[in-house]
Length: 287
Image 1 (cartoon, rainbow, N blue to C red):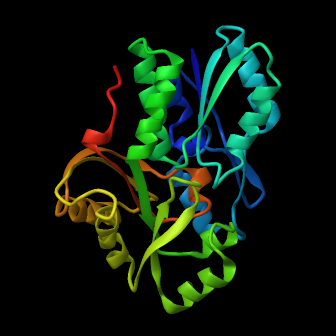
Image 2: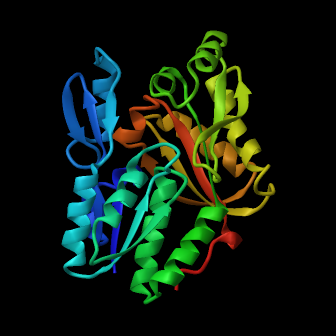
């Protein structure tokens, strides 16, 4: 079986190649120059470009044709394909993959809408790789990916709302009002529709970071053992604050911190701090 994803999982092309995954990059344009997320620009360079950009960055998904070409090429080796993508509530990538899959007659393509992004999507990609190595069937892998999706929560906050407003991820009027009042939202990526929703509002960015564990306790009881990954858009001090706040509330198994990639960072800007987590006992075995 072949596994496909997109760069919304915040895995680089080299990381995907190392685990045998085909990655289709989202594209980002800054001041008229186009880059392939996860391929030819690092998050560090991207955020530097954003800081000095004349206008807002623009993003685009892999095309239907790019998906079709990848599926046909992979199907020539193995007709079984598992295609795992960032939330359809935040990007048209998944829908492009669905359309392309219908065009490839000689392939049996299972499509996964992870209803999350960044490390949350990567968790499902990496789990699929491990289960494939363990010899699980595609049906079993898909079922356990759903268990991971059900168990996983994604929260974040950010210091500047202008990119979310410009990208239409939050309403223009609501976002402008929050900006004028200096309010920093704590945002969840909802697991039902994969969209952003305010779960808390604080008067400072630091207070919003510290509120993330409190929002998580509404999903997972305080004191639980949880598997957690920090996501940061070039904000190591904010990530450290989030780590300390989480450890006061939960028994945390930390995965390596991930840098928010260019395609996602184009809609948030520098400074975002996020948490992807799941109660350890709710995660399925991968063997």
